[in-house]
Image (cartoon, rainbow, N blue to C red; front, side, top):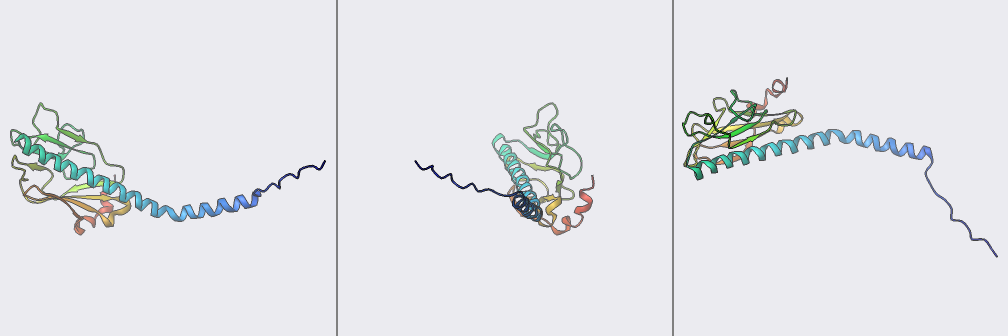
Length: 186
């Protein structure tokens, strides 16, 4: 009886494996900047969506509850913070006494956590808070909340609130993008 022939074994040599790993490493390093920009863009869009949804929700609450509602930056999720930097989070609160602050002794209607590292949201100067009236309009002048990411600061976006209460997305104001290096020194 004849013995059955064993199949030939094929594999990679150590040199072939190391060459393949080197090529994969070089390609991964070449793709890192694009990956960083893609992640920055994704974080920027997530913040944009969360902020727009918050403002629309606040407007809806003002209309349905027939009360004034304030949206403002917050560091603790319970009270408004001063300034125009929203990176540490923001809150939505009822403002029955119309003092542009969430009512004392009540919990916020909603609170939002801080942004990922390297992101900022800056309110237009003179408009650190957005106040929606019971008819859905926003008091004051148009407000612009500009969203920046350290790795994608040239393509910042903004959420704009018109006096009518309409919330829309727009390109970032070029004047607000100029000093982005100073914004991320923290």
